[in-house]
Amino acid sequence: MKVAIPENKQLILFDGVCNLCNSSVKFIIKHDKKNRFLFTALQSDIGTQIIKDYNIDTSKTDSILLYSPEKGITYKSTAALKIASHLNFPINILSAFLIIPAFIRNWVYDMIAKNRYKWFGKKESCMVPTPELKSKFLE
View 1: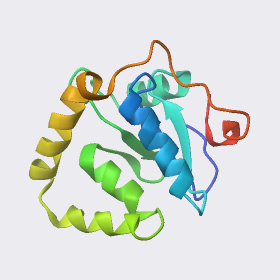
View 2 (view 1 turned 135 degrees about the vertical axis):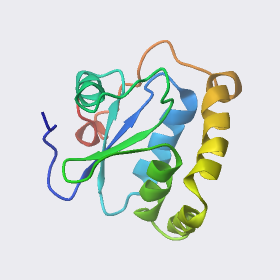
View 3 (view 1 turned 120 degrees about the vertical axis):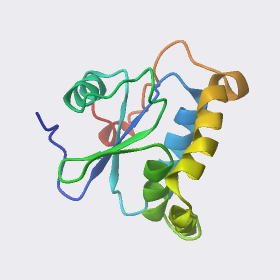
């Protein structure tokens, strides 16, 4: 089952209890001037459905996910860099790192993901968006 999202939008799935992930979402929202992204926590009903539909083993994939009905799922460093490519200059320049082989980029990504709770902390529950940002989040 494909999750319905508006045309020309992509859905970012993130760890809703991770401080680094929540800060990243806020950063993306601030720099997403073309309003291309929607968000949902991996722990949400929609996040759980996408994980199930794509048979993603969350014990092996400690990652941000980028979803679009046309392209499916992208994760880890590729997802992060593809997200950056749609943000404003100079952030979009980070997409140049896509030329680095994924196994190298993902090694760095995995090191950060593995230590994110230790380095940045963890919330007790998922972030609740403010009324102004609610339209950017799928429940």
